[in-house]
Amino acid sequence: MRTILFVISLLASSTMMAQYTLHTSKDGVEIYMRWGHEKWWSKKSDKVLLVKIKNTNLTAVEVNFGVELFHNMRLLENSSEETYCIAKQSIAFPRVRGLVFKPSSSESVKEMDSFELTGLEVKTLEGTACPKQ
Image (cartoon, rainbow, N blue to C red; front, side, top):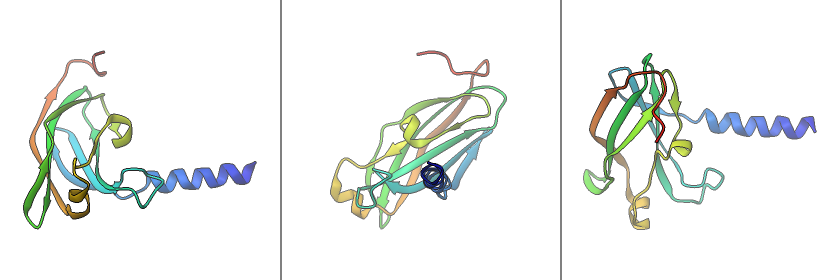
């Protein structure tokens, strides 16, 4: 039983420690990104862009942005802008909060090589938690 728990903890820690790169920071919010697989357990699944957001503020914030995916400096696809609420001093993980961006065409998934954030806005909210929706 201990061996199984040890193996599970190793797998979980290696997944959690995957390298994210700080893409930008604005008004106490840091946005990290990395390429990953749509299915974290399958290296054969399509590539996706994973976005992790860290709020270092003492209040909750709303972060609004969109993502553009490029190949050889040519725009392949862009997402609509979405708003995400992040509680005070917390981290929004990609798969938990829906911060996974995948082009609609499987052809594009094989070709994309760079990305850019569009329309990044950070709005400070009153209080430390996100309002119920």
